[in-house]
Image (cartoon, rainbow, N blue to C red; front, side, top):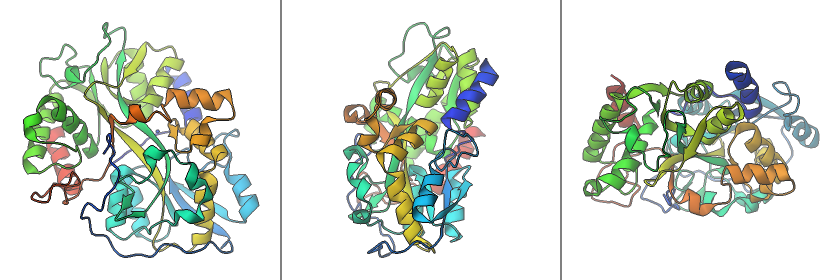
Length: 399
């Protein structure tokens, strides 16, 4: 479950100020992978607007100025298309999946820990990218990834991405770390001050570390774990549980903890680091030598959409350089459109901070992908563990 008790970047910054003064590498290009999905046809054309579009999205993705007067890209869309936008902010990936299965919503901003569930369940339809002119400007590293592309069909239009970096408080951690080791070792010098992300998908973080430190386990993709590999990850997570000071899924809490030194180091998002630094917190981050997990969100259209024309118009509009830049900067992530990195110093600086077009950086980042029985690492002689098994395992880890 991806949980974002999360505010748009602008709102986060304001709130943080009060409190303290977003398979290549990692995400490997998709092959069929043997994953069987319902045969659903993609749209063949975009017709007249139906008058509305119903969207489930993360906070900060669909803004009409009501939260922050400076964040409004919905009004222009409504005026240009005659499609009224009805937005519901999603709290977790699980909630989004359940709402999409109800058939009430046309679009969802799905994360990688939800997208394969939606595809396999027939809840979303393939996207005809030829009907989305701005799709051509998506960075190459976000096209054709296994979490939104199966059997040669694209099921999503990328919005943005980010890495789960190792963040640390420089007052607590004097020497810049290069490894995740101190977040996993039972004898860590930072026992009681380690932060970990609170979600079943965090099992993949343990798997990334095991890939580098225990190659005999044969893990080649942190989202393709057979039962023995999952058991090894769970054991490592239990060890970490003994040194963890806190688990987080509230970004504001994470900013506060790492800034104040309540936490010395642990998994974080780049936006958490940026907000902590903006508030004067002695916080830095690094992408450790073992690599890291990360996340990418995509617009996905319901297979039961009652307003597919407006939905397609929104996907193209939101993928334009101007709007994609606004969404990514408001939320705090690397934009999907390479053109969103151009046109202003603000755009350039934002993209530099989030490594938006740096594919070498993202080669070491394993984007969240829903674990399924079919091993997406290419093995055909093994059965991998699925998301339900990960959820059960996570409960076991937390106790």
